[in-house]
Image (tube, rainbow, N blue to C red; front, side, top):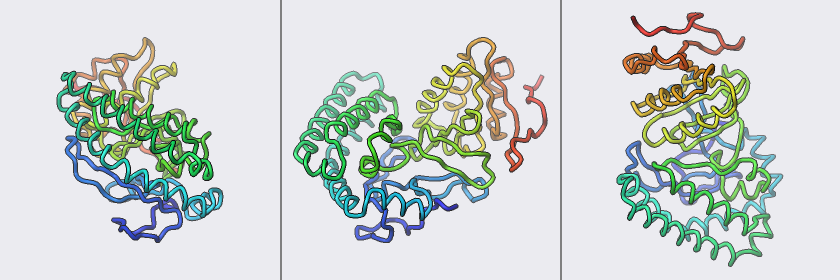
Length: 337
């Protein structure tokens, strides 16, 4: 894959092997939202889907191939990128304590969803963080302007993201509006980094066309593929089900059948199955939720859950080839009698 990250990982404090490298800290959590610690990463590092590779994924550079990275670097200019990186590192250092407090408080809110006192505490933590971010950016307004970073718009973007994230019921990362970010230009993308902050294109061997990324939190990637098909890659668990629900709800408003490709799903818990069934039950009359490439063990669970009795839900086996989509059986699977 041309967009495979060539860097040796984990990144060290002194790493400088890639000219487009943008150092950032990443706070990891497992599927039960338990913190796993903080690590150094690159703002452009994400994962790509490759069904021919063990595990189905590979470390992917959001900027693309080596030539794409160099073109991006030339567009921003190395000297300006260095200035953006310096401000980014200052921001990471300044915000570390706030992010730790925010993360810990959100964990408590997720563990006790009905506790309004914790929710109010979380809102207060967010308000304090936003005020500190505003002061940080305002105090550097001239430096930011010199490298193409608009202080007011950045503050607004970060505030909107934090408020939206506070309202979710899990720790999954949300993505700000991709079109808005694209309009704000390369320096803002460099400051924020990664596909989680902007729309991009990913391809893999055997893929038909390209996919626009709708959601990518490092656990589950949801992309829009050819014909509007939703392509899932990664894990569908308690941390990612709300993101899946949001994407399905948005697709439902498009006025046609929803096609979901689960070929790249490595794990799906009962909550994920329930969300698929709930979305199928909510489909308007005459429209269906069509699921393709579903793993065999999930088929068994869905049959036990009674999906065969839902006229708005269809499950079909298929694979993709260079010639296009080929049905495995040529017919929808039927629930056992």
